Amino acid sequence: MSDAASLAGLSDTLFTLTILVYSVATLAFAAELAFSHRASAKALVAPDGSVVSDQGASSSSRIGQVAIAVALLGTALLGAVLLLRGLAAERIPLGNMFELATAVAFVGVVGFLFLALRTPRLRTVGLFVMLPVTLGLVLVGLFLYTESGPLVAALRSRWLVVHVTTVSIGFGAFLTSGIISVLFLVRSRFEEAGSAVRGMTSRIGQWLPNSETLDRAAHRMVVFGFPIFTFAVIAGAVWAESAWGRFWGWDPKETWAFIAWIVYAAYLHARATAGWRGGAAAWINVAGLVVMFFNLLYVNLVTSGLHSYAGIS
Image 1 (spheres, helix red, strand yellow):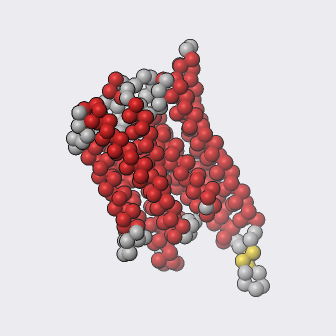
Image 2 (cartoon, one colour):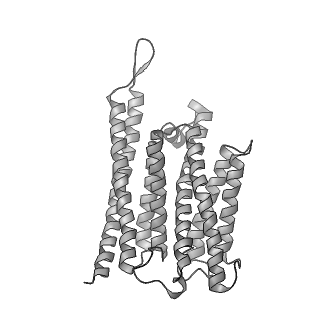
Image 3 (cartoon, helix red, strand yellow):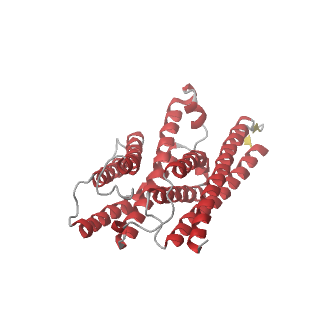
């Protein structure tokens, strides 16, 4: 077996291992929430009325730390998946839908881990980030897997590195931000309704950090991702001029990328505008994530256009 084939095979093995490790991390984050809820229910009250921490709270914290460590391990493995695929094919590992989706998942989890390590209260968001990412990687492996190989002729350009890398980073940041905005909406409803809220909203809402913390985290990720995504759109236009002789042609991919850019620009504007902060801005952010997924999946896989040959941005 050649060195390239060995590297590609190892990459595929690590992809499967990443899903297993992420599954363990997801279970650990779920266990942290369960222990945290149990600790809150059993908290001891001192004679002066203060709440005394019990062992349940410390157990929850330890489990959360383990969950973060396992998620870090899985993310290192996912990074190795991309690295080995790139070494096997002797190119940047962003030449097809499988690699692009893997890179987006990698960046999204890195973004969450950065937030959780910076603000430990956001660790409780871990279950809601890791679960969809893990399920997404399973679907990517089942339906989008492509064997490692050389790029098609149309993608052999230095602009591939610039354009698709920045798209992946921007999308990954938007992924984490959009999930946190959904949780912000749940938590906001819980805070507004209080004991009157029932069902899943109540059970999830009480586990989450306060809405202000979630809103700030979601905003921070978009502030990071938006200029990078803006540069990706510009780089794509420059590449289009080099490849097709025009900067912009309203190809379906270009059109939906522009729509996504408008939505995220609107989110940042709304976030800074009185009356639109909070829930209204969060809904715009969620809409932006929907547009990004529509552009990644439907436009790439269903519609026909100049970008259809590789299934990438």
